[in-house]
Amino acid sequence: MSNSSSINEFLLLAFADTRELQLLHFWLFLGIYLAALLGNGLIITAIACDHHLHTPLYFFLLNLSLLDLGSISTTVPKSMTNSLWDTRAIFYQGCAAQVFFFFFLMSAEFSLLTVMAYDRYVAICKPL
Image (cartoon, rainbow, N blue to C red; front, side, top):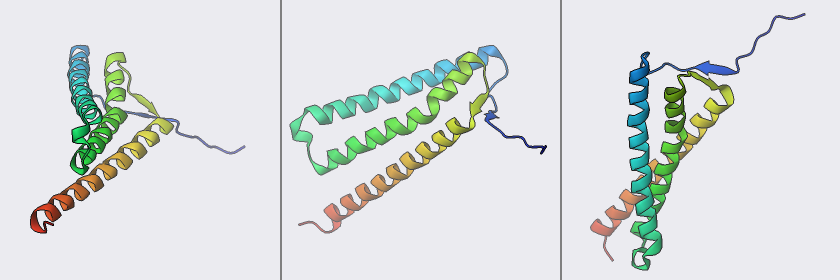
């Protein structure tokens, strides 16, 4: 019989140990999350509904808003639920999924920002 153990969850470090500060953390992050959802949702709706905004610049802004929604939705809801329910555990698969999606979305966002910067450089320095 071999001695083996496996880790199936991690314990996260809490922002605060007192319940009042955990609830304050929840409400603060809920406000930030809802503001991000509302702002990016308005940008996506405005670009999708107005046909005058179907240009390359607004196409890039639409994709940037979608990537921002994805990146904020990978980490903030888990942090809010941990603060609300006073838990600190996250399963290994959930942690791996969060890390994968966050790095994927952030690298896509940085790539898109690089393409946007190059587009503006070409438009200003080498006009048609």
